[in-house]
Image (tube, rainbow, N blue to C red; front, top):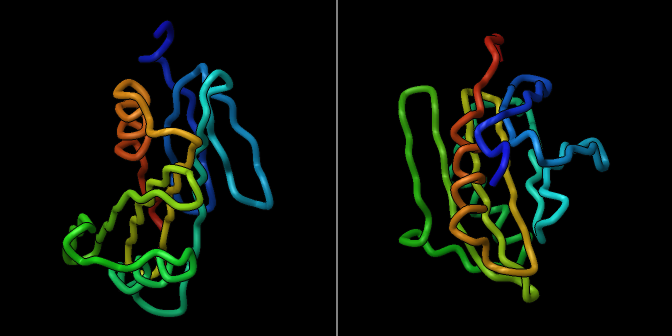
Amino acid sequence: MAGAGIKKKFQGTFFELQYPVFWLHEIIEDIPAFYDPNGSGALQVASVIKDSEIRIEEEMQQFLFRHSIEYERDKIALVEDVDFASAACEFISQDRFWLVHMLSLRRRLLIVMYNSDEIPTRETGELISEFIRSIRFLDTQT
């Protein structure tokens, strides 16, 4: 796809990321959304600062519960390090494809959600992966 390697930058409250130059960006109810105007899905990035350290697996369980999705530990990709943690899963709900990828650093939590009327193509999946890999927490004390 033309321009696929060229990126735009977005800076949120305590994070930054890059997205393809041909995608559009909007703020919807205080949540940034990114999407290909010729595609069928959108990526949203919600950011939260909690009062205490994030427990990423609990956050994912609660998110799935709120969306009436059964939590199955073996279907969640979990990575936990000293400061940083991530959890990701995919599911179909109400005839829509969902990808939820959570990233946490101490008390900061990012929830990256992709949803679409269809399962993403390989090309779209690669763009979503690049988007998520580009996320950087900004240096703050929280």
